[in-house]
Length: 179
Image 1 (cartoon, rainbow, N blue to C red):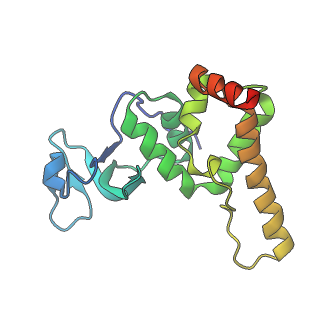
Image 2 (image 1 turned 180 degrees about the vertical axis):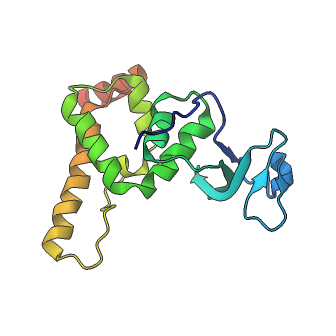
């Protein structure tokens, strides 16, 4: 099945900022009687979603319907210049741990270095910042769970090895190493 192309220049996520919006009307959305979605002034449908945590808790927000699939979320993460698309896609990609692990393994095995732009985008993926087994563990033997944990750990280690840091951070690290 071919993935429908997603418009990277269109907002696919709406979210509050430090809880400054708390109901659909604040986002310009109207409730559709008897439905679990909302509509904007252009007729686009939106589903209520608790979104990313920017340090003060998960934000109240919405995702455009139909909810983007894995490939569409990956495209938004790696290509869209809309901040909410970047943050929202990074958040929802956690719903696809196996696909994401495979995609990242392929990307990291193919590259000797990640450019600064891709490094910055991928850094929004929580799984590359903290080592956790994101695979399902129920019903698996401890050895299998540990093996999957090691795969996730390798992804984080590979990201750290391949990422390109900004100039000021490299200077700071260099100076700290010289002390």
